Length: 264
Image 1 (tube, rainbow, N blue to C red):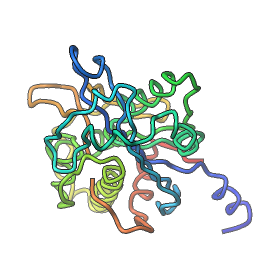
Image 2 (cartoon, helix red, strand yellow):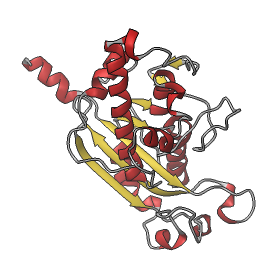
Image 3 (cartoon, helix red, strand yellow):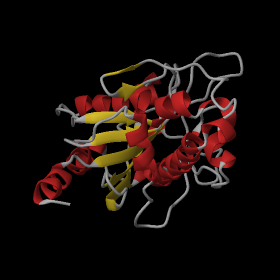
């Protein structure tokens, strides 16, 4: 690579995959009927190699502690006791801002959920929210390109399809599972594009193509729960730790093939 190429690569914005865990709002009783961030997790990766550059995760004590459940239905779920001694959002806001601001934001259903919750959380403490230079919602990308072959578009279902284990519903684990799912989907799509007449017969016939504008793919969805069999809306879920280091080149090859996003 020549000197100009090296400069362009070094100046390219990094991608930050992030995920939030929140309470489930109740219209009456605890939590004030709104979302409270209970955990934040993020991984910064190089867009050319998907090498992990930085990671951060923290539990967060909500302003209304009663918003967190006393017990969790999940084995590793977040409970009130777990967040009681955690820092408040205001106490970790600087670190979260530094992780997110000026980077490409990526995640599963972040357009409809995580990005909205981040803005709300910063507004609650009277501070401007971090701003992305672009965003990649894997829910929209995979809905358009991978389709219903893996069932609904929940992260847990996609992970099960590829044999990646069970989702833990913890932020950093979910982020890492998101990366693994993208890598596997990109590999399949790359192979199908190499032998379309042999490998991709009927692979994309079951799912409608979503609209694409402003370098962002979005699919209407409520919160992070998946659609029912009769619903047209789509949604979210998530995790599995990956081996620290390179995630391979398949996803970058395929993203370039899709030609939907520009990282530079």
